[in-house]
View 1 (cartoon, rainbow over the protein chains, first blue to last red):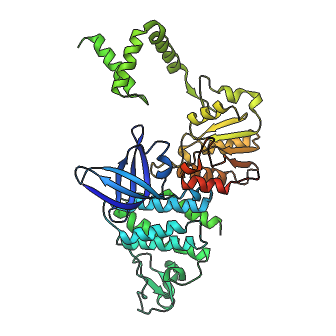
View 2 (cartoon, rainbow over the protein chains, first blue to last red):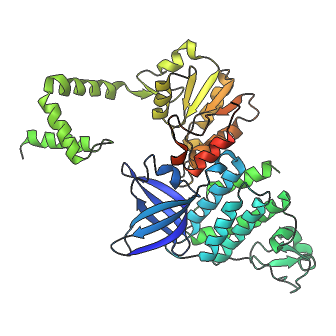
View 3 (tube, each protein chain N blue to C red):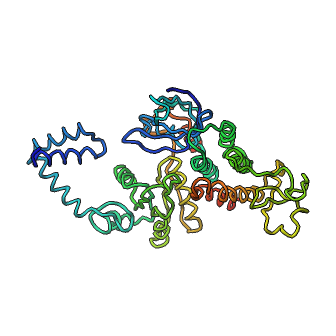
Length: 240
Length: 199
């Protein structure tokens, strides 16, 4: 068995004295692990940091074997290490993917969005908004997408102001009526509008966080969401 | 297999678990020890027996020593107000080999890691914050590895020390002594460029 692909490093574990088991999010093969010989050594370790983009060749005798990767670096994200909020963003992306993606199931659309958000980290002021939309895409890709197309009560496509915490559907201000207090405020940024104001992004992350915890985590054995996501949200809140 | 042979096999198996040794090299090492019984084997066994009985973590910094408070923490000349935070005892020993740092240390015992579910409470971060308050620390030097986990931990500690009235610094990152630009990865070159200084 042999294939070539590109991928972003999600996690690295030392294997023996000099090798490492590297988990990648690849474009055509999804979340896929493999051994990198010498991966824990001085030459390879800097290339195998979470978020780094690699060109890989995977080889194994049988398809269900762990297999071994031969890696070539494409893009390092080491420059994010000095930016604490961007680094928190990188940690949240890699931790959520490691937490939520099934092994060896391709998600090419999510892969491209992941690379796009990783590329924006620390380079654009709008990266928190891109991160919010990436979380929406993650929910969508894993079958827990929010339905923000029309009001769940009136059917209108205008004046959408809330999200139902139970159904994940949008609700208009008129449709919410006296239930408004029990609904999650919907920032325009989640509808593709708005200017990416930090408080709106945080409100959006409150919504995606609610559904990650309420829908996604129970489907994955009720494990708690990665701490890295909570740290990012906390940091974004403090740096408004 | 006789008892004596079994004992030697057990020793080989134990030695093979050490870093840097495999079954074959462990076998060679044990054979060498047996041949140099008086010169190596007995003194090594005695030294290991003593260390097994006395080695312990320093209650203050986490270094390994033979007393409750390690030599570095007891040395009043090292009360410079500078505290160097390292990930592991091996890092502390590496810093000491350099003989450039004259202050005291704090060993975290690892780094924050979502993958291994290591949070701040699993490390000595609360103890570090307490030491900064109690020991009149003026500067905390974050000497953590230049990895994603290492730098995430460094930023977390800097956050925790915000408002504590202490200067927080970190080791420089960039071109190593003897390093050639052609062989450096993009990240190191980028970090070195960001941290450039007047010449």
